[in-house]
Length: 405
Ligand code: PLP
Image (cartoon, rainbow, N blue to C red; front, top):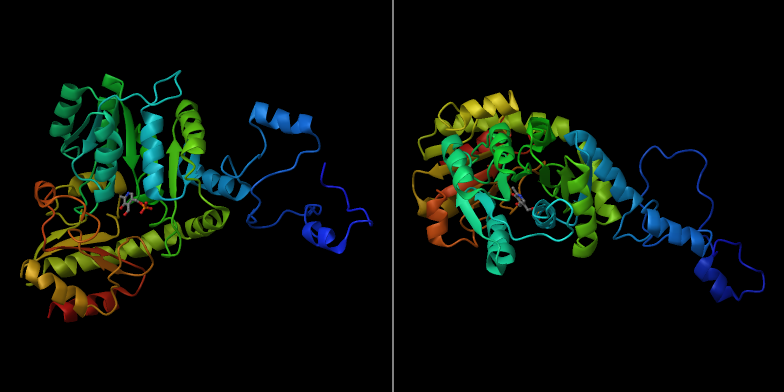
């Protein structure tokens, strides 16, 4: 097809359009995955193109697959010990894709409106997604405290959901899910378990090995890690769910671009090192805050006072994540002076970066909830969430101390 060297009779402008493209690929393998910016692929003949469509083998069009994105999907599949993964343009798109795939019964291609049992403690936009794209269109959505094993068992037995959605470590109160127990209850009623593992990453927890069906990541957070890329990933435990994800992601069209895939892939190479440092820093900061007179409550599962402490130790081992939330004793009016006085913590609406960040959930991650919904979830106006970075712990503690003073 169009891979022949150009005839010498072509005009200069024609030659300029095609010159340099479709040269032979290097014989030696590049050490790192190249960024494939091509949207489409050429086959030697129409019959070969038709065969590629028919078998699903080979790249056709970038929304269907891209070698750089595949490399990232392979990396997260290995990290999570899954069957395969699909990359999306954001964590929200990944959650949407995961919910659609999990709501699609075996042998069918379209999702069915079976009941979704969702954790009460979820990132704010996840709840809005459930409300506006599922509940408002006829899929029943029920919320329960899925981090309390008894409440979870009762809710699953009562509602017999088609699928369950829970965060391994919840944003922002850091409640801990008992993934293996939830998976066992789900199996008993034939429900699929979808787990948002953004805050734990595969370094702290590998939910598929505990029986979860799909694990979702906002790669914008720890996997990317540097505050410079947005993306989402879903890893499937079975080939059936993987096929649902692939098919539906082609229709959703929220595919990840190759530049972003390369950045996330690079971020993942240092994920273990960053998590080690960030979790160790968080541990020191949580202890500092727990003893500070200006702080009334610290939410951090590494503290013995946290209700999820024992489960965190059992599930995550020595580390308890790299977020620390706290209530200021001075109440809501103390929040702005504290945040504005911080010099090293950046007041930015994300988490998981190498930079330490501060945010106020009532104003940011849970802004779209009503005051009543926030109150039901224990998210007060004096709650502050700290995402701990890789800086020196001493500098971070000094910054907090001066801002609290
Ligand atoms: N899941 C959790 C736990 C989050 O905290 C977020 C964002 O903050 C998301 C999903 C959504 O990710 P994204 O912002 O990449 O769409």
